[in-house]
Length: 108
Length: 114
Image (cartoon, rainbow over all chains, first blue to last red; front, side):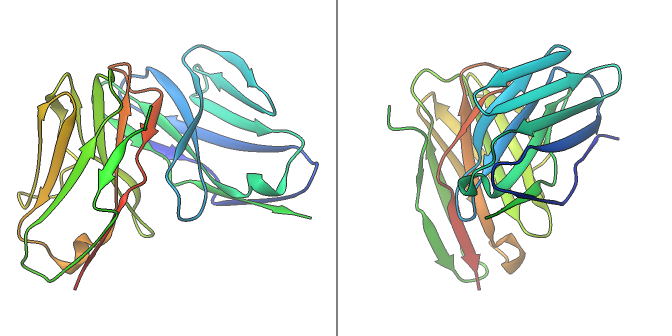
């Protein structure tokens, strides 16, 4: 079957660095995407990795290891506004699936 | 660009009624996705279209659900008859690429079936 696993909740303090992991199992693999969703809002696109390695976009970075079926989202210099749910998403050969989401709480 | 537009934003209906949700994707985007989000089941892909053609509808829960995309700028998701368990937030998203790796979501329609 196809599945994505990510932690349900992560807590960190303002200014810290946090890593949200995602492991996947799919039939075929085209790439790993990350989305952010604030309570009551819609998911917004953060990043996409098709190849192994680290992609950096401002305070956010995303990493992919295709051989390990693993990726992570790295958030640096955490701010209160980063408190949200973060979803990894994978497109396999036949399916496009989202993970169950990681709720990030940023404490002052 | 106005982004993905969905209507209505909120819908309250009684069990057994027909519900139609509407979506206007971002102009020029080739792919359109319909999702359902609930606390219990998370974000589920219901169906997606490439160039107005349904590609994967395996996520459509049952025959009560149907989706159409008559042209590149409009799609509908219909539930007939609706049931209380259909209560959820329904999102439409569009993507420039057929792979859908970067999707832009609409604000969602919050559906409540009583």
